[in-house]
Length: 117
Image 1: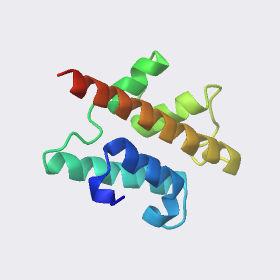
Image 2: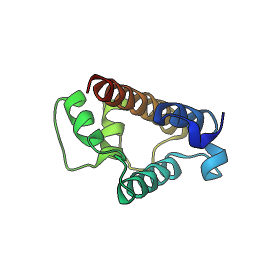
Image 3: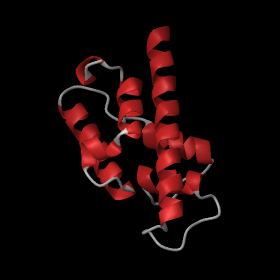
């Protein structure tokens, strides 16, 4: 399947399986930057981007803080907290896994709402 023809969920599932194909060395900060670039490009060209994702993460967590969506993902993935913004390799691997799970859940909800309209 062509990347252009994929739904948002299919596209991000593809990225999750092959992040190095999109960002080179696969790491959390690279994936966060890639998502931020996607969001900005989408919104500049009339797409929804990640509009509403931060709010959905805050609602899922049950409280807000001064972090953007990347910090909210860390809070969900590491509910006992973390000591440094730079995570251990194990923590980073876990946060990446949770990031894509949360993103898929968000996109699934958005698809369902759009289908109901």
